[in-house]
Length: 116
Length: 111
Image (cartoon, rainbow over all chains, first blue to last red):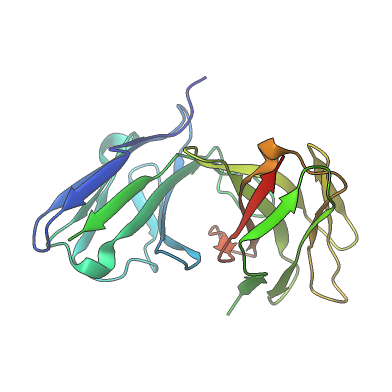
């Protein structure tokens, strides 16, 4: 069974440009999450999809970030325009149910974004 | 709000040494606690978990006990190997869906 897959693995863009990250969850997982780790900091929750609906987007830093999950399958996270402080590793995770309590979320390998 | 504090790294140990990575948490209610590991070039993997007080999670020789009285979930291994070199993250999940992570502790094990 394929795990959570993220594309690209690395991205280097200039300040002001647009970048789109993609996440393919495990097949059959309705719940999809985005997290971000800025260098030396905690991994922070960004948002949570249940199928194609945004369940919780309280962690999204500002309106330069737009996440979508068309058809409830893969998800994209667009940053437009990118700023220097957006640099970090973006993780995607998926889980079979709502993830409350002890249900395991499976993570992708992350996309390392560098804004120069 | 909920938070996790774990010891700063990097931690460097010789092979077969004893490992402890400290983790304490602040949370209301009764969270579930987790240790995740990220090996070089890979994604986060669940290492072990505990869902209630006094539970002990264990996997691959690693152990951690959920101590509510000290709000701690310290990770231990009796004899580390070079292959254990990775970044270790302590995390909690409370009533919501999101995981709250610590900053991560980098472990380097030398032969």
